[in-house]
Length: 406
Image 1 (tube, helix red, strand yellow):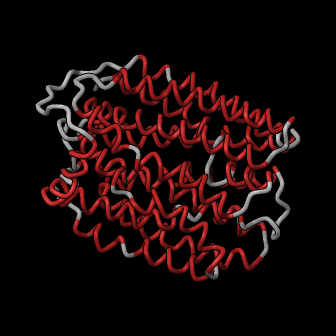
Image 2 (cartoon, helix red, strand yellow; image 1 turned 30 degrees about the vertical axis):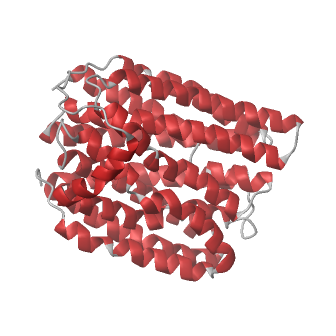
């Protein structure tokens, strides 16, 4: 095993977990928008930027990075740009303290988040390549599950810190502190990438344009049915995943929308990640990533209808239980999709597959915008039940998927 890379990835996973908790798009970001005076549309735009843009923007960078024999420099560039972006959001909130203009505030937040997500997409392609290049088979399974376990522990610890800051500090100064701290923690996390060793892979392809890359996608999907089935599965599961920020936004008016509530939701979400990771680890060992994908579809598909009934109760304990399940679903989704993508790709086509995967995740990319409008036009009950059924239909395509290691 490449121990240097193993511990480098784990170091990044731990400290990046702190960053993720401080900027969580299911709880912290929707709460920031709602408390500033925003509604479902504003949450939809921010969710689109947080979830959709990183996937769709990979098509911009894939033709460039795919043809580079060394990917590590671009990984380091991407993560350093993200550090700057988080500090920029912190400064924007500081500016909002003295210039309470909601429109200008949202424009600046959107711009910094776009910068953050674009640089993340740039780094993500290189990250997936380096991870797949460094480990194979059981070593890869061990790293992915260990990384997720360590991330969940870091998330739980940072969730406690987030709760303390949101409770003790007045708004919006508490959110300003969160983003400045997130920037510092991501700087520490980047040390894990500096120590990585990268083997040079011989590149057979010449550099291509974005247009040519887009033209290649249909043929790539026809030639690689596994990739097609995994993409469809991820899209269908994302239909339910993107509802979580909207569910958080809908809590205003039903509960006291305080820093304590948001912090507690974050704690239960990450507690779900930690506890469930031990279950997912056993499932991966016995059933492989395909078996975990089936469990993921059942869990994620059941979450939107469950949310509807819990919101009718107006009771905080069932709400905490729901976010515990949300954390479990997020953890399962990350392990299963990341592991599945690594298993069906090779060192030569991994960047290509990752770029195609991101470019074709249409639901993750566009549905947050549409969903923000749907909440104004259609009954929330219909949205929750319909999206749940959409996610459950992923079971049909998971059955067709063939993960070689499984």
